[in-house]
Image (cartoon, rainbow, N blue to C red; front, side, top):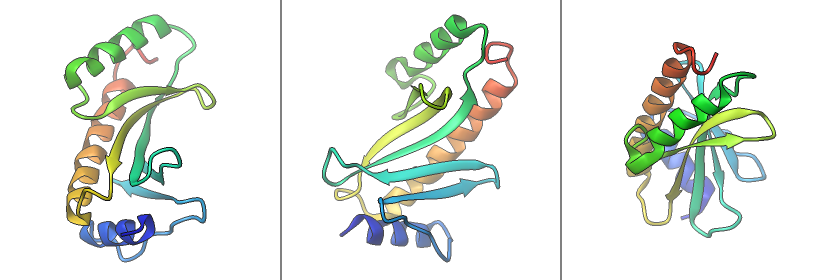
Length: 135
């Protein structure tokens, strides 16, 4: 099944009536009206998709303390499960990221994964917004 077909069926399992997929193989799903989850087909790995969401901006100060906090959360998935926290140097954003093999997963399974990922992204967004580490 192609990326576009997989994502359309996944969207249906999420209760979405439509999902815009770009020519570059990207799409966006928004949870709770404000947490964007970007999904794109991997150009490096056949059958894989990248799922990511910005959870905070990198602050001008306390960077070392923040990065230590994030790395500790990544360790053994203690704060991230099967996802990872990453840094996008271009946008200076902290991203929650997960790779998914869509050819080995059913759209229903991907929908469940995206729901859990969206909830985790919202938790991280709220957590970092309410701490002085990321201020």
